[in-house]
Length: 458
Ligand code: SF4
Ligand code: SF4
Image (cartoon, rainbow, N blue to C red; front, top):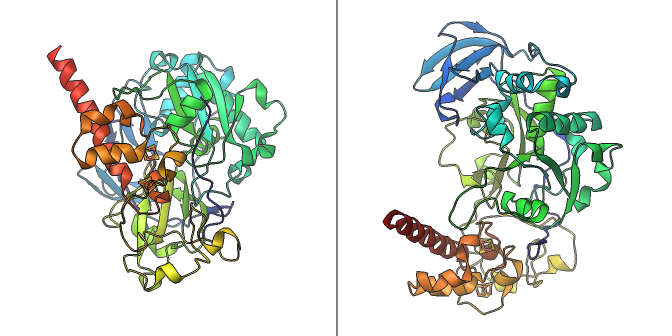
């Protein structure tokens, strides 16, 4: 099935510039190692120890032995409750990875796998890869280079390095997932940048739509290998692995160039960010530190800080916590709870509108605004079908919403609420500002609950 529906976001305020910045080394880093999916990591340093960036501080009991290196030079100031805090000396130097090789694909399988674990690259993927055998269950690796969410329209592969790094990443994944076909899923907007000589030897290139949410793993799986990532019963297909492009680049840097796994590449964007773009951020950098260096201050806001993309991410309750392995995107948008007086009389010079009712659609002077506003509150459904049009999984969100409004969950099942990928696009385009997707999610949860109850009683 090919991609249908979706929405192309154009020219939004705060879109990430195609630039990779280096965040300054923070004053301290806090690693929440108890939250890393791999739950057996234990510290191999103690309070008061001096540590160097690139030298092991946490290790799994194994096998396989997986390590996490210090992201900074400094002193371990605290180890407590599954966190390790390091006060840094501000220097940016690091020790190279021991045992890295320019061409890991020439190693034997056990050696490639050991390097993957010992360098911590295993922590970039999900926790299922605990043995070579588990890698052999993967039949399709999909590298996700699609990038089409509202603040992510300027991405190009060159941001992260040269063509050699891309090829090295693909070849390293092929060495690790020996029995898998490697697919590089790219946005048609970036087709030219992926015309890398010889790349087709290492991966099949799949050119994807530039409409959001084509980048969603479920849609990538459906549109590249024609299989579901998650079944209607909520079971993940273990033979498919979706790897974000930036994580493949980090794996290539670590295993083929010897840069230790000390940072994450994070897209930090939105109207509340002073220089929206991509950042190398040392692992464990606190959100407070990002706030000080990158986010605009409260008097220019108020702002909502979202861990992730504006549609899929979660709003920060507080700035406690720090950048860890699951952080790839941080978005800061305007918190807009105030009703705008006479909004219906305004031409909307900077307002996005799926129904093409604002001036911004015809005269593109200002970038469009991205905010949390519901533009005046909920109105009745006008049966416009916009939510059906944009839904990428071809279900009828407003009919499901209607069924759920009268508590007819089982009636809604024939409309396949279990296919919803929770992209939130139906809510975004609805001119009546109805929160449709929470109702679809409620129907989906009810379907899963009844399926599991059936399984238990069988
Ligand atoms: S019903 Fe689900 S998949 Fe369809 S647009 Fe709404 S949130 Fe996205
Ligand atoms: S987009 Fe909103 S108003 Fe239009 S059909 Fe869907 S729920 Fe109704």
